[in-house]
Length: 461
Image 1 (tube, rainbow, N blue to C red):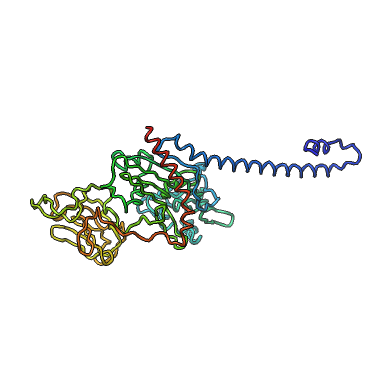
Image 2 (image 1 turned 180 degrees about the vertical axis):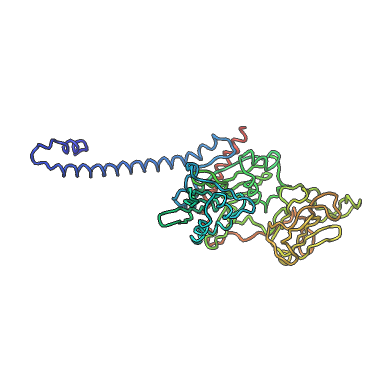
């Protein structure tokens, strides 16, 4: 029996003998439900097919777009999100926005909003959820609704980019809850070619300065971005974009990247150790990109003098050996520890001026000279981490201008820090190799496609 026959039979005149109207209506309702389920499943299947097609098409259509920046329909797993939506402040005329200024307290803000002092006591008695209101900072915004009698009806406060506090008055009094915004991570890419500097090329590709700095940090153990960068070098980056309630909040982590420097290909894949939770960047072969030392202790500076056994000194006016590398940069530029170590010297040291010497294990030491000042948290005998700021560029001692004089020694012997081979850290453990390959193989395939198509577009333009 087809569906039309079913309807026609069910709606015959009630005067016909032997028919039961209630039964006919019940059968019709059941049939409608069955038909609705069938149609819903068909719709869901169609949407799933469309999603797969859009994912496949995203990679195929890359070559049709500019080699700059584009969002891909290749979603990275999103963090868990609370389905609760924040109060729509824009559409509520009753809301008053209180902006925290220096010296303000919640009591002072309530007073400005003509909310009675007793309301503050009631708010603070709500429990630990309201503890964030005791640590407000200048620039924070607190949205409130109060009635004409000065009684608080509602309060909304952004704790951070993910959480917000919501207070509402119900029949029994005030209630406080902390909610989470709907946070989603999407995958995006950027690609470019260097003509004069990495920053200009990355800006042209649509990358933020923070993302560019992260890219330099990822490859900072293998590439000296002050010395090694050449015109024609290329990069491709796959990174996260963080969206909150459907609007982009910020850039997230780099999950995969390729940098072609002077014809040599470097690739980085982000991997989280499933046992320890430690995060690192590795080559496709599972080798850690992190080395025991950074290639350069100063980001994006210019090398004014290299390692030499015979160099004319600009102040002493005579030839002498120069057993380090000079990085010229503006006064006050941060100087980073090139490796984990211990401070074995901090102070003035003759022609070196203000100097710090770090000891790394039993074999290595590094020296940083001509500083304008030290990081006050760094003390003689304290330990520092790789990349930690230990001081700032200056011109103390025998220096003709602001720069960092940097020395690298192995067993007390000076070595050229630009050419010495640094020891690597541990690769992916064998027990995690299968997990590493399973986790990163998709990014390797994406890099292959993106890099190839970006090169084709750059050549075409």
